[in-house]
Amino acid sequence: MASPDIQPPRFQWERSGHGIWERDIEECEMFYRGAVRKGNGCFPVTGCASFVSNSPKSGVTGAQKNEGEHGVEDAIRKAWITLCYEHPTLRSRGEYDEAKGRWKRVYATFNNEDEQKSWLNSTFKVIDTEVSPLEWFNSQTICFEVSTLFFVRSNTHHPTIFLRCPHDITDGVGVLQLVNQLFNHATRAHEERANYAMPEWGNEHTKLSPCLRLAAAIPESFSEAQLERFKEIQTQNGAIYNHPGLLSIPSSCSADTSKHGKRQRLSLSVAEATTEQILRKCKMIASGVSVTHVFMSALAMALSELQPLKEESYPVRYVNHSMINLRPYCRDPYKSPKHAAAAYHTVSAQALGIDLVVPGSSSDAKNVVQVNNLANLAIQVRDYYKSVRPASSTDEQIILAPLMFKSLTAPPDSDPHAVSDPPFCPVALSSLGNVSSIVSKSHGTFELTNVWAASEPIGAGVAIFLGTWDGKIGLSAVFDTRYHDAGYIKGFLGRIMNCVYKGLDIGDLPTSEGFLVESIEHEKRKREE
Image 1 (cartoon, rainbow, N blue to C red):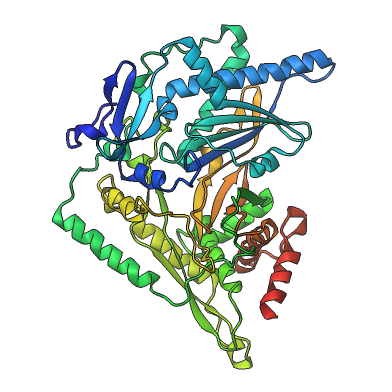
Image 2 (image 1 turned 60 degrees about the vertical axis):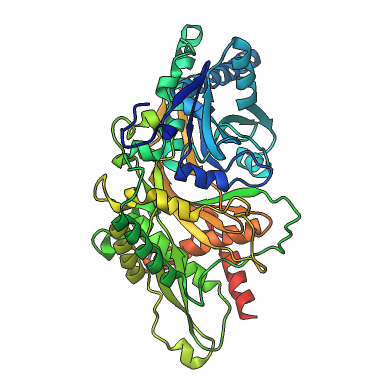
């Protein structure tokens, strides 16, 4: 909880009463507080892991099977308690201070065992379902204010945990680190059984994580030069966004704002051999070109393919910002997984603009030289990512993070999820990199079979997530069912993959891997009608 002297006391955890600690929240946290949907307790980020337990199965009786399942449930329950003791910020809440007119983060330790039991019953949920865990997840509209662990069991699928946290207290990398630690604790609890030592609550406040400003030693006030620099960047961004053909994905549903839509997740996976081929061919484009650069380019190309056909070709532009993981640039010990329950990231100050052309239907337009070349676009994206990657802990991306989040935060009386008529549906891509480097596949008796993390889009947007797990590239999308049809979104993921395959000269999409080639062809016919 130690904090640099350059920060005011209001950002530092301070004791305000018996067993209660609090501090003001800063700009990053305020952005996510402002993004909470009406009627929801928080704006969530989710870490998910499916797993199998390597307990002996041959010759096992029904009673022994039930005992084994209970042992797994008990181990995960104990692991959840330990995880929250090690990361007490998971139990903190955002509260509005009426007297001071601002939000604060509050943490309260347990005064007695009844309070602990009440908390555990409300945050550790065991779900038995007849459908797959993802189907269960997609069907839910559960509201929660503090971090909650769902343990979902299905007769036909591997057991799965969904760790759902308010985004103002962690992020994609952080929630994956928490998932990894959860299974570390579960392994010990499963092995030691009754001998597993449960934490003793009372002094866990010393483990509370500070906000980004303190962890990254960002000064409280900005110099005139820094303010001018941010203003200059915003002006440049304005020019990038000032384009008549900004790309978005067409809404595939008739938007009915009176309905409470669900945020659902869909995903596609690439075979390990094909993943290796993609990795190899990305490197062949040019030095420093990565899978992220290629998929970002393919996303822009896929969106351009969905735009209305006109007789003559016309220009369009894809605009996005990069999410930057700031954990490596934080001070010790905040850069370590010991502070996974903290939102240590930023949105790049500079916007990325990718210009493309939608070919026309006339014979002359069809002869236009192809501008939408994957290799050329990937090099452009590579150069952009290099320009916004922090070079040190004093880089402007870090120092300007509070200003960036403040500029993105919706005014208090507005709804950030309100959409235009017709809806404008932006698509943003976040890359989680190699998830296997954050979450171990093997944890003693637990073998993880699938791991992912995702947050939610704003309004009618679609959030795309790229990551690699167990040697396989995974591409997923989270969307609001009020504006988008699941089949259309899965077809769009297939379209992105199609752009990657063709651009890297890998071949045709394999239908056996779930790519909706038929859906892609249907979309093409629909545009031509």
